[in-house]
Length: 104
Image (cartoon, rainbow, N blue to C red):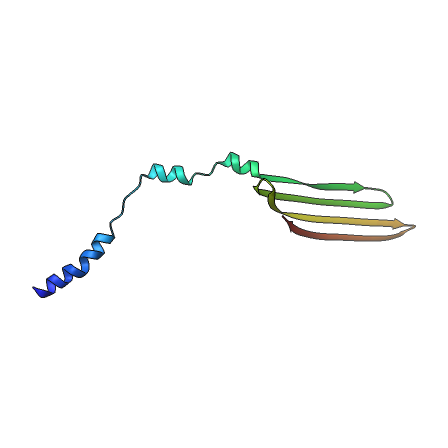
């Protein structure tokens, strides 16, 4: 008798506090949906592209992608590629440079 009374006293609080309310799956789906249109409005892409050909060949490309958190706060990444080829009276010098960075 004492054993069953002790078990009831110790297990009753566990069963009492493990009850929870089940929410509708539809209401959970509506709360977690992301509005893709609003997300697309906050993402922007751009960059710079420059080219020159002749005795001095110069190619510069710098794409960037950013995300606007608030009206005046955004963060993003940028990449840079620069190619230079100089033809100076038969002597040719070639150089290519890669780079990148982050901005806010």
